[in-house]
Image 1 (cartoon, rainbow, N blue to C red):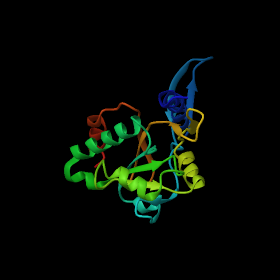
Image 2 (image 1 turned 30 degrees about the horizontal axis):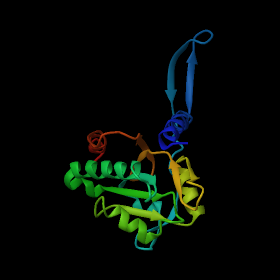
Image 3 (image 1 turned 60 degrees about the horizontal axis):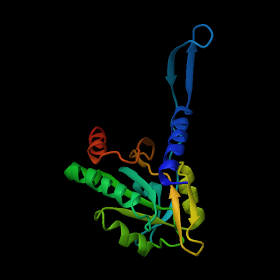
Image 4 (image 1 turned 90 degrees about the vertical axis):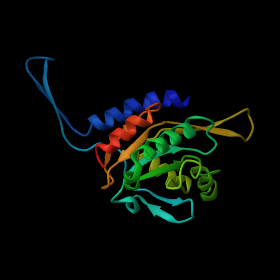
Length: 200
């Protein structure tokens, strides 16, 4: 399954997760909606315990008090991952000094190859404040599950080489760790920056 197809599939799932936080439909007669009232919180995001590019154990709580832009991918990704991380970098650059209130976070979906050193060398290409996270396959899977990230390892050419198909959303989390919104693949950095400015 391609990254873009996964994005379409997971987009529907995310919408369901957000709407599933609680919706009450008031009806007037059979099948005639009058109003929709949504309550509750989106079931996206949650605790994680990973290792950063310096080999230090970190959790989601280490980022409290700052907004988080979170993207899941892998360092061998040929196009989508570097493109989206560059979008994040451009959006933060547009914020000027306010960018200090935002933690740009890259979480690998390929812990087998993406060691702390590899992740560290990768994220420094996008800015000095980028945080690269990896961990055990179990810890990475737990983080991906919390963020409703779909991913799968795909063997290539019948040898030991492989790629990772994955969903391609950038998640915006609040200073309290709660989900705010997500940006789909192809969202321009100006839109992300404008969204961030409305909160900062």
